[in-house]
Length: 141
Image 1 (cartoon, rainbow, N blue to C red):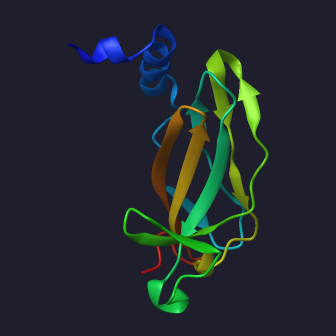
Image 2: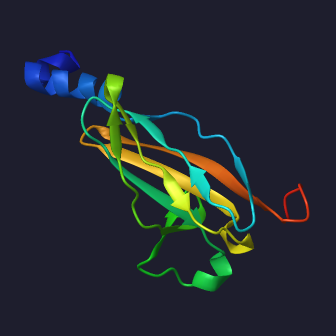
């Protein structure tokens, strides 16, 4: 007896759609911004259904030990939830959710994660934001 004997046509179709229709995030390049300027991180998601898109920032594990309701573990690293941005729908089932950081400081530098989910699954991508000094063109250590 094969596995398909236990599955209805509807559940088989749902299993196939789950792998195909989960959101996909275009790779997000690292971004360099001069201190005091506005930095924008872009998250472009392809999804056949309207996704939920959320940005997160990696935090220092020692500052949040034990983790709080505002933090969670993502791939072994501690992240905090950021204020959601405005999501825009474009052609070809592509959704965009930029994270806009105004008047950036060294505290904004770090690892960010964009997470997109729909009823079929979730995807994530990571990107770094580097802050350069007004007097320098190299990232701060």
